[in-house]
Image (cartoon, rainbow, N blue to C red; front, side):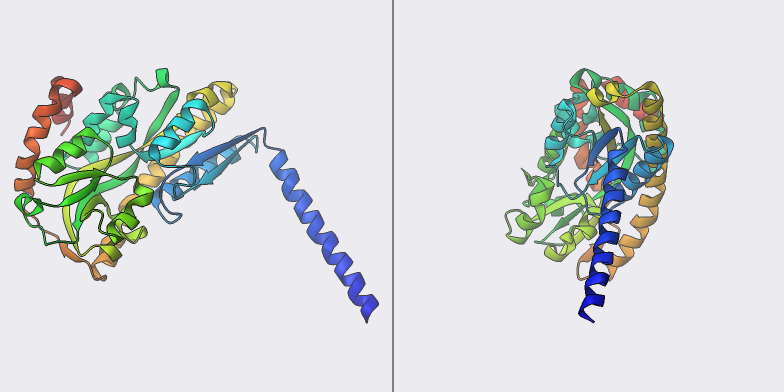
Length: 331
């Protein structure tokens, strides 16, 4: 019996060794192993879009390229990942455009409150000449824009009080992204903006470092922010486009056939993620309705839009009044 068990153990070890070797060999076959990072969870649309991109690239490159995905801020915060892409230590990044304004200031256009009246309006801007124009300064910074995924409509949450009008938001400490238009909008509401990295946000809310924050429903629910917030107001004050960046240094090292694979696959993955994000948003709102957070679903949006008007005046010179008007013309 002991001899039989010994033989069985040897056979099992041989099988496991063979599997391990096959896996190692499979990984070794990739000529290019590229890292993609984002800040969100493995259940977020970013991750699903990244997985679609991985699937398409690896298939179309016949295994020459392998994409390794690192969600949940594993590769650092947004700015860290963008700086990593600049030097080629990170090869792709999907994330909010707010940190990108540090590298290409024209992206502040997309951070203006109530810029877009619908997703369709946003897509006409992002996928057209304006989307290319605001990204034109990235290549000189070592970055390549592959297009825009979706982060969704941003909404306001807090722990202090229900918010129906813009006046109700006065007096709060609100976490914001490190973006001048976001900071100005929160100030216009009469609240104090507090820039905090997204990876630290849950703890900051739990420990009451800030009273509230603003984010799309996916970030709020999937990161459990609703568990440390009492009130949600569907302000939809910003359509948050998610830029899909690649290291230009890395892109330039690839042969032309693989460059085409990357661009084509990114385009398809973007469309896939956008459709998925819309479906997920509807489900997430239902799940939030079933949670303990109190939701104001019909706030006085006119009051919020009036409050946002000074933000436009503040940035129309640096962004370009003509550029803002071009966006308006595409409604």
